[in-house]
Length: 209
Image 1 (cartoon, one colour):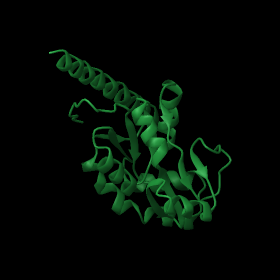
Image 2 (cartoon, one colour):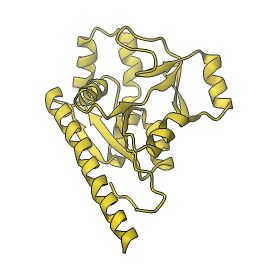
Image 3 (spheres, one colour):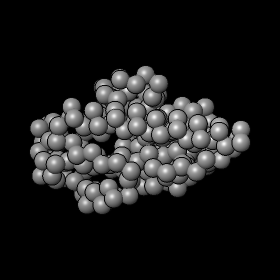
């Protein structure tokens, strides 16, 4: 991605994983978080029920619908969406504080939320699309995980609207091997941080001239 260096530039990076449900975004994100301790997950707000593998304030802020609606009224969310009947949103304060402190953050966000982040923070947002080897393989993975047919059908309805977004992203990962996909994501984070270091050096030299 391209940056424009300015005196007021805030350098924190937002890594956004995008792709259809069941493609492996969370597994890739978890792997990178384990390898890069200075990278932090954005806990998006949601009204859905917490899962056994999740922790309050880590993956999400699990709140009631009335609390979510109050956050909307207070303009405390960058954006919010209804996904599979539940509300999801990105807390504004969390993101802006991280950017200002040069704290790199990562999240699994739907295509509409990713578009809003890119629009608001174009110099900070890195979009990574994760695609399955095929749509048939995606369905097979959900069946293997034991998801109900109704849940699979509901998730598959969004695939046709999600897949075309890949061309708008900065990177593309095909998750036909989870190990390789995780390694590619790890490399993306390192590459973007290296690019940032060069831009910071250029900016520092420009100030001295």
